[in-house]
Image 1 (tube, rainbow, N blue to C red):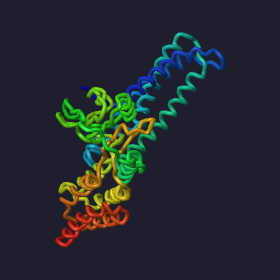
Image 2 (cartoon, rainbow, N blue to C red):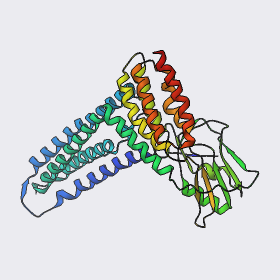
Image 3 (cartoon, rainbow, N blue to C red):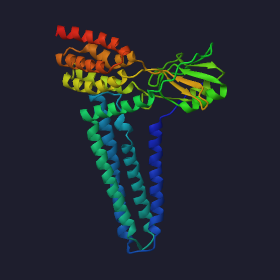
Image 4 (cartoon, one colour):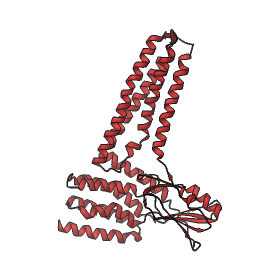
Length: 381
């Protein structure tokens, strides 16, 4: 039984860098052969190209240094699970563009060295590409500054969380139908990994071909342990390998289909701020603003499993999603257990009261229990 262990972003980053280098190599071989237009001495052009190419190695080192420093800062200041800057496409695109420009400059310098003169289009193109790289480096630097500032980080996490919530809680819950009895349970038989994404289309096609219904018992973002049940297959027969191949797993959680990750990150930032080593209750209260908005979004909706049908409208895949209690445990309970600051108690209590105003009736009981706990803590302080 095998699931697909894919490091998607790293694979894309490597392919993009390779593509930039190949394009730079190709342009460096083709452009110096242009015969039309004004000409320039090849020796001077080749020297300038080599100087640019060697100097760009410093830009490559700068990108790596910036990446290392920002990731280290974020891990120690906010939470080690926050890797948005590392996975930001601007980082790897800028790095790939710099490598491609190095390949172009070096290749073009070697190519033009064979002729006494070369088209002025070659140095002009090199300068234009260098200006593009400078603009990309500027954008990367601004993105790095945002990645180490509290307000932009909190806002970005909340925005990503809202996108995932909108995608998985569609608001078009289909009526549950009785499932065929005696399901076959598929069990994880490998070392622990994180379920990052479920390939829905592949599972629906497999279930349709087998006339079966797949009920996923693992939530995207959960850790799959050896021996833990992953899915139940009702009706037809499906091999474990067929189901597991549609699960993308990896070493860490991602925003792809994980509705709890944004809540976990915001809670981690608040907890880090409340630790005795940091003791920054204002940061925790600021994180509550984003948590309140996300919790209010969830509280106002019915949190039913996601049911997928085939082209004929027959239910083929049921994906279990986190319930209201799981959202509260992830975002509130850990904080409520450790807080001792009046500012934090008041801030969290006020946030939950505003969430209660937006909540469905079925969600108010859990909120009332936590509000009562915070009332008791406020009375003790």
